[in-house]
Image 1 (cartoon, rainbow, N blue to C red):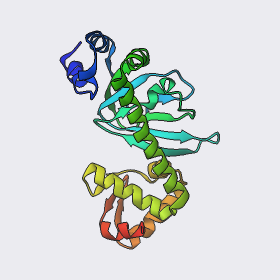
Image 2 (image 1 turned 180 degrees about the horizontal axis):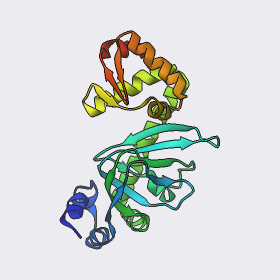
Image 3 (image 1 turned 90 degrees about the vertical axis):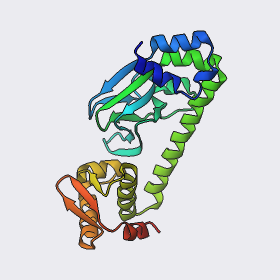
Length: 223
């Protein structure tokens, strides 16, 4: 086991509550994984992977309709844990999601068999898994609320403002096609909204990028 893996494991909230043999099991079975940008990480049609702890990069969780339409539920970044890749040990989860690497992703994987053994014996580990699941369902509810109750203009503005806040940058690298896929809309409709925002001076559009010029006015769109 590498020192890097050991350091990650020791940072888990439930680590100090594990028995010696449980720690040894995690140290023995956990491994580093890498997913290139665009790779499918998990699908409801596949077997469970286990819990993924992201060290670098971004994972996108989305729903996929029979017609191939995608709706992004949430994204996970460095320091986040992806628990739906271990959904088979969460009996309350009854719907399928798709998870892809939005960028190159480096992560630590605790295999589902290992995770299952520990959560069955250790209430602290079990509690951690369910708390992570609860956080993600809150993200899902928020995404559904936006789809149901916000106009397309508001959804585009909310996405851009959220990306700006998370990346600490006014410049967002995203194509019209990617943005449409993220919010579950058509590219043509999103392009029309972006052009309207640019005409009003809220944003500047360049190839593959959107720069926020007037965040105050964009926030007003959400009211």
